[in-house]
Length: 110
Length: 114
Image (tube, chains in turn cyan, orange):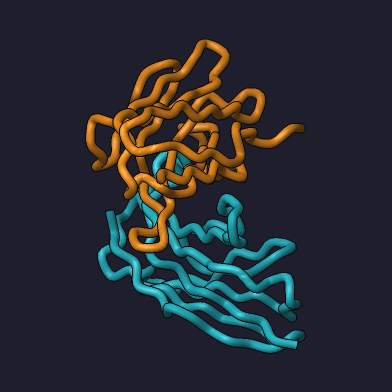
């Protein structure tokens, strides 16, 4: 499984855009990139998944360059409720066996 | 539709005892995975069950076991509890084999071993 590296923590302010970059140099051809969000004492929640280029949904955007060795999760106009830990996962698309790294703790300040 | 349900939410056990945790997946989901989350080790995969068979297993000792029933509900058991087993145990269900699947997690069972 490809190892991922992401910042340990990031601070932001309400209304700003938050971009979290994840490095995954050893990503395999069949691997997808998936991001999960986790609030304290709750299970992780799926945010977005992509394979290449750009993916956007109602919550976030995921940017993946052509070499796929990194990806950036973009959270537009964050609010206090977006304070959470964000995990970047790289692996096959099936959600039945996930390998979590350390995640990025995002703190949104008023 | 109802989400993943884990019971109980909180549990306190004594060292040496055993514990059984329960997970009811989302209706129609046949894959159930279990994870352990601790401050020191983070989120770690325990095992996955599909159609009543253990299909994947993480790197945990044999004291950790599980099973899945014909209705896809799953249980995990930890025997001879140790203090280090104190953790949030999370269950997730998913549709394996389909593209772009996501895992749906329950709220977890907080186990404290004293």
